[in-house]
Length: 176
Image (cartoon, rainbow, N blue to C red; front, side, top):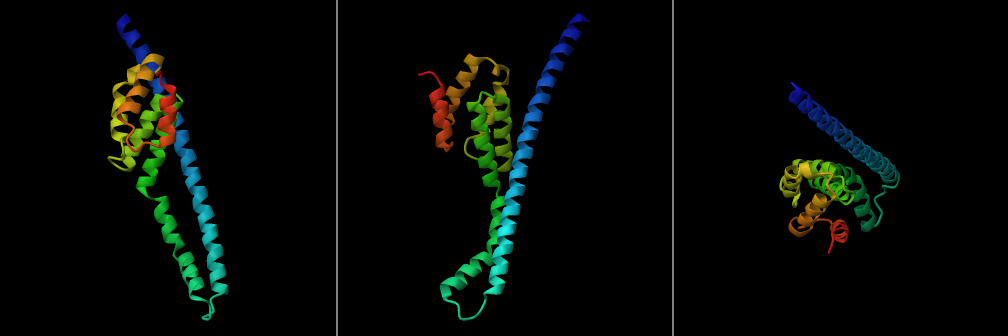
């Protein structure tokens, strides 16, 4: 009976920690969604202005270079929509957030971000491998020495195509 109570207490604490981590992840997702919405509004406004300008100055005697420019503006909405929904760019953003979380010693968030990168674009850089490493070393989160060991592994084994500025920050954090 006492063993069950202890187990339930430990399990409750673990669930509370997961709840906090999920709240942080949710806030990150909300921030990213707000950024995307903001970019969509900016692009939409710019496209509307460009279309208004184009409709007002569309005489036939414009130079070819201006016609090409007008054509580019008319086609810009499709390009913008593609860039916003591009899974590779989403994976890149998640990967970057994962490395930033590692730099800030927030390994649970990093695990989630690398997992999201893998979901957004399977086999993206080393996201799967890093996510798998962080999942297997989850029990080590909070132990400074073991966290440094995780950083060393990521720096030495999983830095292929990682953002150079962030991987160099990790390199600067690990002991020589």
